[in-house]
Length: 456
Image 1 (cartoon, one colour):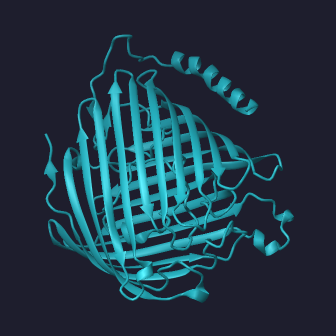
Image 2: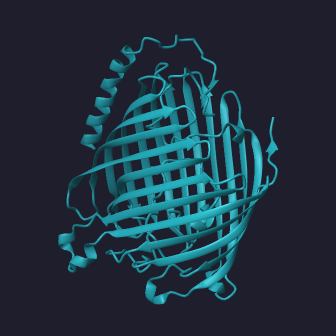
Image 3: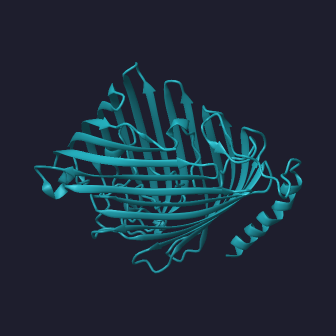
């Protein structure tokens, strides 16, 4: 905690220097009307307002046509799965099944507020192996309110599924019918280790306040609480507390720099001591209106493990890239941090990389591809393990390729192939860890988006 105090003092001492550097600050009673940027994002303040790189939401390009509507959708698909239970290769039992999912998206934007509500749910049915039948629900809510220099964010997400959301291509193949609120990975429970099919519930809440010090500078503070609970036995429940704060400064209309501090507490069921981490990151973001959004951050992370081996230093950070052209999109994200271990490991040094791309092939045909990789190393010192092979990190990856054809303005047909792989790392907390996972899927289905209901 001494380190935390020193860092907070450093941030507070930095504030006067930033404020003095602003030549275009607003007057005490001056209010600037909201402006809509060319990329569809609503900007409250001047065109040089900084990107909220230290906030609790991921920054992303948005589509202006997606505002003020109520949009339902349905997905029906058939799947052949080489390993639907997610067990190790020696117990593989292929099966084919049917999946039905539905979604409802509500978005409403006003002069000083923005509301997003998303719900998705459905089920998977395997006629030959009814024990693998499962259901899926996702409910997310985000409310943004702007009052003069202040902006407030309240976001919540409930996620129920038998599988991890990392590499869950059943639900995210083709158009993302079931979407999230854009909450940062820092405040969400990490699930980057493939496991057996176990019913789990992920619940996250975050509150954030942002204060505009000037037309070029903002200060953010966020607090988050999340839980990852397994409704059947096998893995460890996780409770996470997160605090984030930072200063964002716009160098110009396109470039933003940030200094941020964060604190995480991970409580694992059955483990006496919590895992605590403190990190300081310097960040840079670049926005090219409507086409490119890029950010990168890096800094030291000081953490303790639950094995009484003292404090350790870890270099963490994250980066994202969203590039948009007339005929497609490309999204790349990288994240490196101390995590709870996904309920599988007793804390982990986690690295994840995800790449997604879409491309229009013709007027009616389009393709998409996705790649993902996760590296999770147990925090426990390998020298304390009896078997050196048990100290290997868990390495997991997935890939998906989809081809889709538009049948009408509100329907499309798609086909795809997905795969998941994970090595025999360890030590795992329980037998629920799918060491040596090998899984392949062949899918085909229909998406019905229906006509959106536009709101006034």
